[in-house]
Amino acid sequence: MISNKMQAEINRQINAELWSAYLYLAMSLDAESKALQGAANWFFVQWLEEQDHSRILQNYLNDRGAKVVLSPIESVPNKWKSLLDMLENALVQERKVTEMINRIYSLAYEEDDFATMSRMQWFIDEQVEEEKSVTDAINTLRDMPVYYFDQIMAERKYSQASPLKKDDDSKE
Ligand code: FEO
Image 1 (spheres, rainbow, N blue to C red):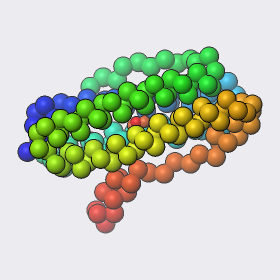
Image 2 (cartoon, rainbow, N blue to C red):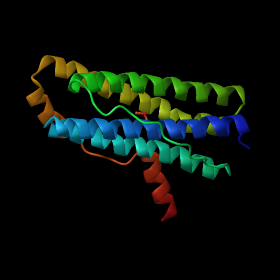
Image 3 (cartoon, rainbow, N blue to C red):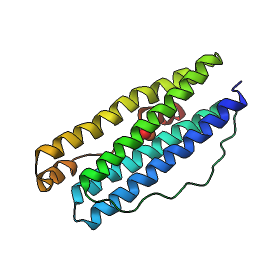
């Protein structure tokens, strides 16, 4: 049985992941308006990945017999000074998400909720990747002209998050 407190926390995280998705969509659109097609692609892939993160948590609550409650998604900024500005803001957001994930894990530990600890472990590992990929992007951008970096960003491809792939496989 998942506690009411935990249900509320995970519902809050579902909303936070959707807010992140919305933020990255706004960055993708802003990059496109700045003729940075590669960066637009990179942020668009991130928008898809954040929706996956939310979906994993929705599936988890459903699997535990808990209720997913969708709350309004707050508005996001629509404009940034530069690509570097976008990435620096993305890093701030990823660090916030990491803190939120850590808080959920800590609550699960207090409540002896081992199933939630197990599910949140995926997110803890994912956040290491998320923070690293944005940090790497910032460092690379500082070392090369935006035009060339934009071409590198064009290469990023979307791959569905592994817990969703497993869910799909198990239904076959
Ligand atoms: Fe779902 Fe980028 O954290």
